[in-house]
Length: 69
Image (cartoon, rainbow, N blue to C red; front, top):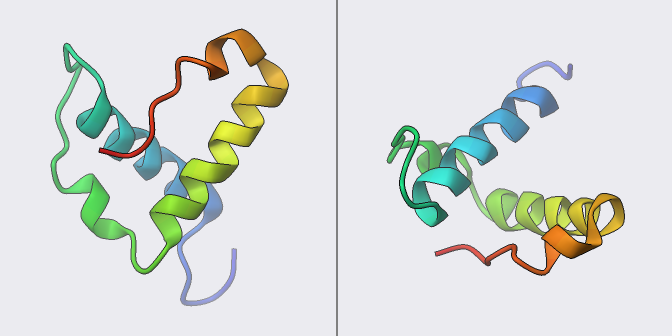
């Protein structure tokens, strides 16, 4: 972990909470503030990289991934 920056693990966990709150139905939980923790292009960058990883590991499921709401 770098001093003064959140851990990558924390950012990925928060991304999952934000993405779920914005894109899933029914909601298992709703965290409307999760998206607020990201600044600049962090959320979009994580979304792009997660989509690429999903396409690599599970191409069939990647076709169902939706962009940010």
